[in-house]
Amino acid sequence: MKYSPHSYQQYATKFIIKHKACGLFLDMGLGKTIITLTALWSLILDYFEVGRVLIIAPLRVARDTWPREIEKWEHLKGLSYSVVVGSEKEREAAINRKAFVYIINRENVSWLVENKMFKFDMVVIDELSSFKSNKAKRFKSLRKVRGSLKRIVGLTGTPVPNGLIDLWPQINLLDMGERLGRFIGGFRERYFVPDKRNRDIIYSYKPKEGAEDAIYKKISDICISMKACDQLEMPKLLVSNYEAFMSKKEKQMYDTLKEDLILPFKDGDIDAASAVGLSNKLCQMANGAVYDENGKVREIHTRKLDALEDLIEAANGKPVLIAYWFKHDKDRLIKRFNAVPIDKSEDIARWNKGEIPVAIIHPASAGHGLNLQEGGCHLIWFGLTWSLELYKQCNARLWRQGQKETVVIQHIVTKGTIDEDIIKALNAKEVTQEELIKAVKARILDGKE
Image (cartoon, rainbow, N blue to C red; front, side, top):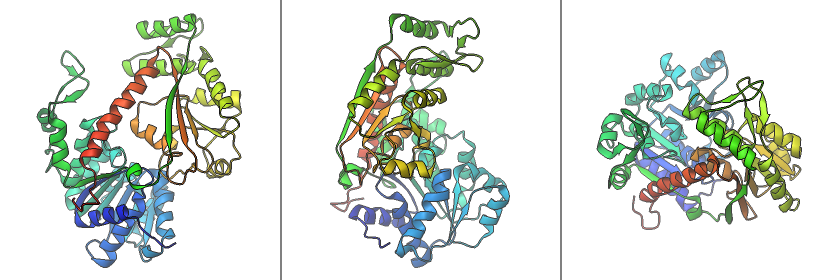
């Protein structure tokens, strides 16, 4: 296929070529894969700057999306590649195959480094935000070999999924500490103050006054952002909440668990051993069913299922995609609505042909390279997620270029429960991220960088 790039794609490709280390914060649907591959072709086969490139991506994207894009476009002819996934034997064979580009899933970065097979002069990290933890093994492994690289590119649509503190590991991989400091302790001390804490234990940090602008200024020379709605003709988007209400008895059960961390039952209590465990159980209760201490599913109420039935009916026969979080929610949705899980490529094909009236999808599997916009325009969040990254990626399966209808996204929120806190948290994270995106926005029209 012939590639006719938009002006923003040309700009982004030139930005990669010009900067030896850079971060591209690109909205879903802007074509970050083809932008990057075009830059790689030039750097390898035109400028001869690099000869062996490693692309790190989520497993399915590494296995399917990047190879498919290389094969798809005429102008990438000559850009040989090897996909380093599968068993250890298969990975070893792939890494020893002669190619310009090697594509690996992020879980195997440590394996590559530990086995002394990391021999690359450029790295592309697809979903840079998956390296947001400086304590993660993948971060430590890549940081260990970062000094051997001539070039590095980080790609993501959600650079600060949980707040500005997430930026340090990502930028550190790009510039080795030049802009935000070599150590995360120094970064925290310089730009943040403790927020939530219990005596000496600090759970979170908040930016000092003026810190956000200072951080944005520091990274603006090597990072650019682009939003789909600024660059493409995006479909109209309507987002709303639909409230569900528990009965007095159901709400009392919810409050008991919240206050006592345990809800007694004759043959198996529902208990929460920690704050994280409590959050998990409260989310389940808001949805209507909970796992007890024996792993048995206890249905507390059907309020969300009833609300969902109303929303499906209101869709007037149009296909509906439902996002769920817990396995028991999936089972209940299948039982109540005969919903079809979107798991395999044949499910995607059936959905896009309009053959599935009610489909369900887990946000963690609704990420990169999954186009569902042809099959419908209505997404309902049955179970909510704290993750802004997963939330946005799941929404972008329908709200993207090529969608012909107005996209309707609805959250079923159980009144007086943790659902309300999750919606607030997502909105707050979105505001923080929007400020960063705005601060490093690519100035294509006036030629500034």
